[in-house]
Amino acid sequence: MERDVSVASGGQVVAALRSRGHEIVAVDAEHGPLSEVAETAMFARGIDRRPPPATTGSGLPRVVADLADSDYDLVFLAVHGGSGENGALQSLLDIHGLCYTGSGRLGSSLAWDKSVSKQLFLQARIPTPAWHMAPVAIATIERELGFPVIVKPSGQGSTVGLSLVEGPAGMDEAIENAAHFDSGVLIERYIAGRELTVGVLGNEPLAVGEIIPAQGDIFDYEAKYQSDAAEEIFPADVPVEVAQQAQTLALAAHEVLSLSHYSRADFRMDENGDLWCLEVNTLPGLSSGSLLPQSAQAVGVEFDELCERICLAALT
Image (cartoon, rainbow, N blue to C red):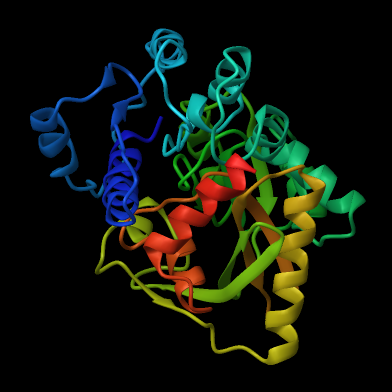
C-alpha cells in the first residue's frame, strides 16, 4: 500500500467530514482505530519524495473483522495502492457486510490490472496506447511500439516502478525495476504530448486538468506529491471540444470498468489533439494537492462537499 499518500488523504478526509458535523473514527489499516494522540501524530506526517516501502496489508483481515463488530455506518476508504485498490480490501468488506466508499471488488480489480483495463478500453472504443506484456522481443517492440516506450508494473499506482525507456539498452533495467512491484510488467507505446486528467463524481465528469511536470516529461511519484514538482492547471487550457471528449471518455472508462461513486482518468493528448487513455484510478488521492479535489473545485464542488457527496453516494 502507498502508506504516505493514504495517511495524507485520510487526514484531509477526516478533517473535512468533521467540519460537516459527522462523527468520525480514524482507522489505521494495519493496526485499527486510532486514539486522539495517535491520530494527531499520524496526520502530522508529510509525503516523502520517494515511494515508501510497500506494506503487506497483513493486518487488514483483523482490522476489517473488528470494524464489523462495531456500530459504524460507513467505511470511507483512503487506502491507496496494493490491497487497498486491487479488490482485496473490498472483498473483505463485502464478506463482513460493511458499507464503503468507492468501487467494489470487481471494478477495483479490473482497473488495477492495467493490461485488463486497456483491453476493456479497446472494446469500449476508448483509445489507449498499444502495449505488450513482458517478456517480449526487442524486435517486436521496435516494430509494433517503437521507442521510446513506457515500462511499468501492470498492477501498481502512483507511477511507482515506471520508467521512460529511450532504446533497447535500457529495457532490462526498466523491466527489472517494474518487476519489483508486480509480477506483470507492461511495455507501452510512449505518447508525446500533454498530460490531462478528468475526475468523475457519481455519473458526472468533472473539470479537465492539465499537469506540467517541472522537470522531464513524466508525471512521476515525486511530481504527484511534492508541491514544487509540477504545475496543475484546472480547468485545462484546451479547446472546448477536447475537454468535452476527455470528459466523455473518462465517463465511458468509469462505466466499462464497472466503477462506483468516483474515479479519475488520466490521458495523453498528442500533437494532433488526439486523446489516449492511460489508466483509471479507482481511489484517487484526496490530499490537499490531489488532482480529483482540484477537478471538483473547478466545477464549484469544494473539498468538504466532495467528501460528503462520496459518502452519500455510498450510503444510497
